Amino acid sequence: MISLIISFYKRLNFLELIHQSIDRQSYKDFEVILAEDNNDPETVEFIIKARMKYNFAIQQISQEDIGFRNTRILNRTVLTAKGGRHVIIDGD
Image (cartoon, rainbow, N blue to C red):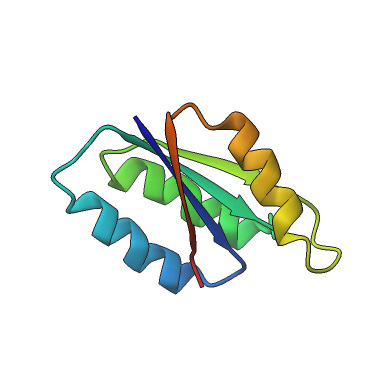
């Protein structure tokens, strides 16, 4: 299995494009983990809708938005990943 880790910050329109691309993949043995610094209501609602819309599981790891700490959240996400290989992309 592959763990696809996507870090993003507030750019939900970009994240939607990534989700659409993932949904079109023929290879389906993966998990999606979102790493983000902004757990505001709009983000939470977006992820709830995405979970219902797409045929792949979406896990969210978030942290408080108190400055640029992307490496910290990525480290936390890697610890939760179940895949034998990790692919990390920047969602915005």
